[in-house]
Length: 317
Ligand code: FAD
Image (cartoon, rainbow, N blue to C red):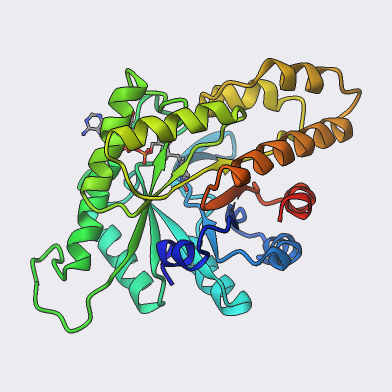
């Protein structure tokens, strides 16, 4: 079922969902299940599964290093299929521009369609670790809006080789990313919102936001988006701080601000156990306020760990 249909069916009640990251290749999927199991009591209608970009690894061959390009966390679609099968829940694979040609994307979407996956999250992807700026893959897309267009074309039966006659059209519900504190490369929030509007105009059905720690930023973002004519559901993505290092890491990687009160509370902790508690309590307050404001879904970045998300969900749902 489509994410937008789940939202409609909930009739204004806030739903619970979360995002997981595939394990590093060679690791068992069991750890993922162990972290999903405790969250199923909160009845997520859908679970997102991220896709990681390829990266270079260096293999030591008797002192000489071989540089190899590889994806360390493959398996997004397989994980989606196995989760749907095991838990009878919808899954949302993240589809990236970076690292994929348009043809590879089409094959992936065809697989999604055969597997009965109704939703995909269309994303550009970040620059590769070794690169300063995002560089489109040869034969791939430059912006998420191009990917949305490809998915929307496919929904009309318009494949890359331009077959339009089909007796079995895909009908993907498409999610895209939004940034309450603007995307790191955007010159202003307004110009970033214009790009978001473009994605919606090209067929995106809903927006999931980057994490934020100050709800005021989310509310302002939604206001601005509505003024600009973005009328699709906007789902807040949130994450509890879990270790002291997050105070530097999260702003550096995701370009988000951390409110002074939260910084003070984390800095006064004696150990990371205390930090986790502070992070959970902050996230509970954030969640309660967002829920009260009537957000359609609270979407948690679990980063593969469930105990803190469970502690939050218990107090909120
Ligand atoms: P875009 O919408 O293409 O925007 C990228 C930048 O280009 C923005 O600054 C935008 O303003 C600008 N822009 C857009 N269109 C144009 C245009 N036509 N001309 C000029 N500028 C333009 N990354 C992963 O690698 N894997 C994941 O699974 C993943 N999941 C994510 C889930 C969520 C909910 C979010 C918020 C992010 C996720 N990301 C993931 C990170 C995401 O890939 C990065 O933030 C990436 O840098 C931007 O992706 P985007 O889809 O927002 O790109």
